[in-house]
Image 1 (tube, rainbow, N blue to C red):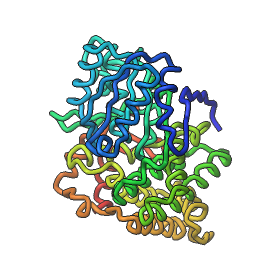
Image 2: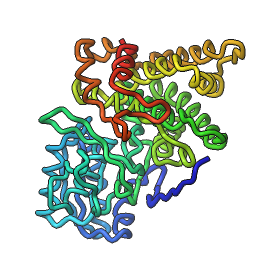
Image 3: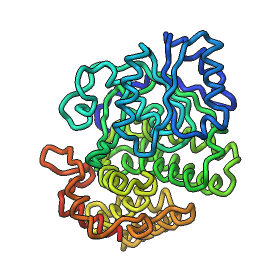
Length: 393
């Protein structure tokens, strides 16, 4: 286990009806005027925005609203929010929604206090040094953005999707009512569960030895997600399943499961290009990419035992000690079968992606390693990335 520093500033308020506490919780954090940022009309039609506004009013906190957050959140909406924050002298940003609204809100909170273009943070020209405080009323279990250090924005003009990791991304408050996720269509629930599982897998596949504690935490959380997703896509109003997914979403991506180990995150970078170009759901893109990444790793002899452990401990496969690669393959097959069971695409064609675009996609993938590669479990170059895309066909 490697050295680590782990700090979570987020206060989690979890359970039925907790959105009614939003005003008092935000006021306790010193907010006097809040920007409420949300997505489509469902948050308005359901009455959630009205309840949040009423809670803020009751606490004596002023507020303005900005709707229109979209999946794969756009820079154009971030610019709009930055202008509104400055014009209205907002001192707290509150996202009501899932990862898209939350990530937009994070970028707005950074950009409002920056003299330059907020995109500088996402293309590597600058690092944010300050940000407005922010909170979340969560309505979708997926991205884990409610307490993560990450934020992903798409630049519309270039179809470039880039992430930013900074401790300034972590919200101070997460209001989490599992009942708010029960009106989602099964496809969105499945996309969310796929994203949650992928966040854990990005941490699970590590070369770091002697990490049995976090291995077991990852494995148990993955099994809980697998079970809860199977229930929720059929019975969206099952509170216990909704609650399991919501908390799993949070701990999957706030580094609770990854202390002392090196994360990979190549699959996320590879997927970002699919959702940037085709505007598909991030979870759906991961359902296509991650099996391809696993198939690629199965070809690397020194990676087989980690894949076999995944197969045995997470999917219940029998270990074949003479042929561990067969066990690893059985785990990949079980993972793909689960994706199909919950209604996810598992091939390029099902996603609407095109083989002809593979060189373009591979060329755009962000490569954060100093040598121009991506990934820590196995460093991928452009040729490797193309091979993974082709294993997704």
